[in-house]
Length: 314
Image 1: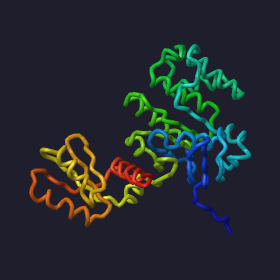
Image 2: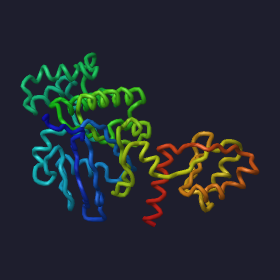
Image 3: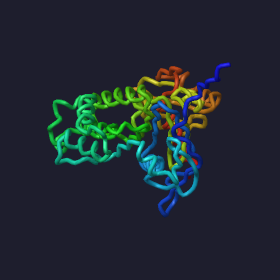
């Protein structure tokens, strides 16, 4: 009889109840998450929501006040040195040497990690990330997009199993962002697991799974479709004249949980479909705007989540 195989994917990050504070209220509160091998996992939330603190606990740079977990099978409390050897961490701030060239920076990193053939590994990273034409240019003279590529090259030089990216595309132009994400998807295709924090909704939609964190707590997680479905929002798109006045009026109505302008439209949503319909019925009947039933977007969901957490904190 042949051995039974399992299709259950390997769990790379498995943490439960992580809490961390720095002398005040918790920055991360009772956080639980599970990330499978080969996924691009998006970590979303406003500034100060606890994303960076969570990443630092996962890679062994910070010890949680409470909670347990493993990263790549290693205990995040007692085996941090093992975690660091297998994780690439790209911080928000460019942390390589401005007065060294691209090639010199990468070769320095390769030697720090004691790679067997540092020059060969450096050239492979340069070729992979399209840096050949700028290989001898000083890092300090690079634009944001090229610095981003260099930083990514340094992170993947030692071939980590897990890549942690802390808002890697902030301040980078759309073309550079797209090229960056193409490379991230290729790395995931090759088996690397990627946890990336971002503010951009289009980037969140390119992730296999996402989690939304605010005030140190995860409010929603799953695939994009699961997060949108879990919000249970009924949504209308409104077009026509006097949208600014309508915006203010609708926000005060019972049954309307979110009103947000999107260009020349308003998105109007409610968590209770019947109450929403009753609230907007007079406006739909008398015009002059046009109301169209639609599907909530990921941004609609996040705006609604933030309104709820603010209400709870109040």
